[in-house]
Length: 152
View 1 (cartoon, rainbow, N blue to C red):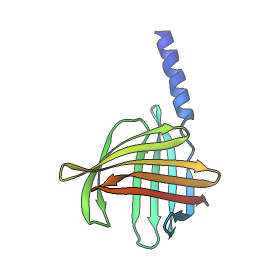
View 2 (tube, helix red, strand yellow):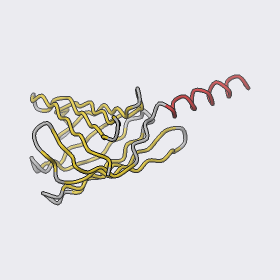
View 3 (cartoon, rainbow, N blue to C red):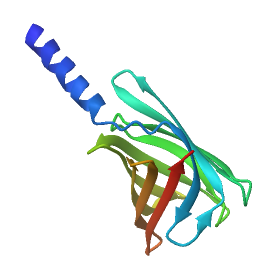
């Protein structure tokens, strides 16, 4: 029994080291297409045996304010979200974990009960830059989005 507790504690401490420190305020954002007017604010804390990231994006151009809660426990979280570009509500089921000093989320998107897309997003720090890579597809369209923001 003591060995099981020791192994659990050791694997817990190793998994917490794999999670990056993303906390901060990031502005001067760019995508592969254009400069983005806004900022990302990342807050993080530990909950039970995993990291939780609160990511807020404020878009100065559109006034959009988006908040995401990312739990790196590799369990499926389900949320509803309105897609402003299409004006429809979708359900997103995502599993997130820390992997190679990045937060990696695998998500499936559902509309009216049917799966319409899948995405893999990866958020990580490189120097003083917050990088977000999103790859996947929806409605048979490929998506490859890169966003880079500087630490304020």
